[in-house]
Image 1 (tube, one colour):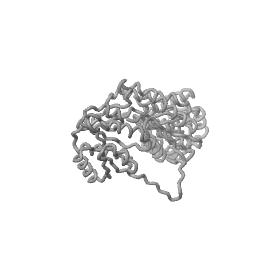
Image 2 (cartoon, one colour):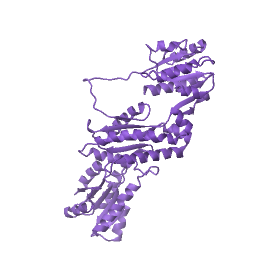
Image 3 (cartoon, helix red, strand yellow):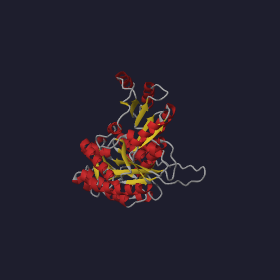
Image 4 (cartoon, rainbow, N blue to C red):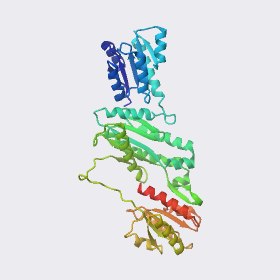
Length: 437
């Protein structure tokens, strides 16, 4: 699908058609403009990779090249001047005006084709990511614009790796780069020669394919990524299924292993007219995939709604505090209410399950209980693994300073006592933002 676009600006019909026949192939699309005004329209619509301009135009070629350079500043195509002149000063003047090469006519057909091919290749080579050897955002955005001008059905996939920043923090840049390179190779192995694979950032991949292949590719990528990911962790982290992140005042945050999220959009269900619209829809669909736990993909589907229907996401500001220390529970409740949160108190740890019948908290602050029983650990496991319909964030507080059994029980944060209220509510704010995002 990586088709290069060549624009020929030449008043001479016979000569421009000849050049088109030499260059046009399955890899090259060639467009002809017989005047400069039409050429400007084509530049805006197709963003050509190479522009050939002849001095046969009723327009000064040097001024035309200067205008091309200004108007194509972001896309930076190669610009080749064609002229019957062989004078050195003419060549110098045109090259000084911004042309990348000057070809004196007549020119041998094979040499002509080789020179143009070399310029296109060099132009694309400058747009490679050193890390993955894939094309960067400049080429990727250009490819998306080109499918918008195509009448056939297409699908675009936005692919990334979740929790990569946390992985990088623990295992380092080199290990993260190796993970990205491995995933890049997996994606490359899953696509067809007619598909396009590139990047829109150093860690986000774009695949352009068709509707039939998109979901098959996504299914394979989720399976393949989850199959290899454990190899990038220590044995203990891989077996545990998460890593520890140090927070403030010895708090320990539990971060899941890296996973992949894939958002897919298609022109089968919605008509797209410009790049901004495509990127906006792609990001929105991709965000839905990221909300899910673990590797997943979301395919944009047609929406069914009543006329003038408006759906608003309900914000959950509910906290459930299970803290046997009455003075501390009162302090936590008062502080939470002052900050605008809704609060319920479980005076006994077992009261949690009765409260949950009518109350849906986004966050549960759960104490471990007495040191001889640590009842809170069993409650935490039950909340996380038996209550499938709701998944609150659990902040586990304890005077027992052993993080591993706490996080293995399913807690999202280990916060040893004594702790500062500012630390506790800093984490509460973070969890609410993630929960309601």
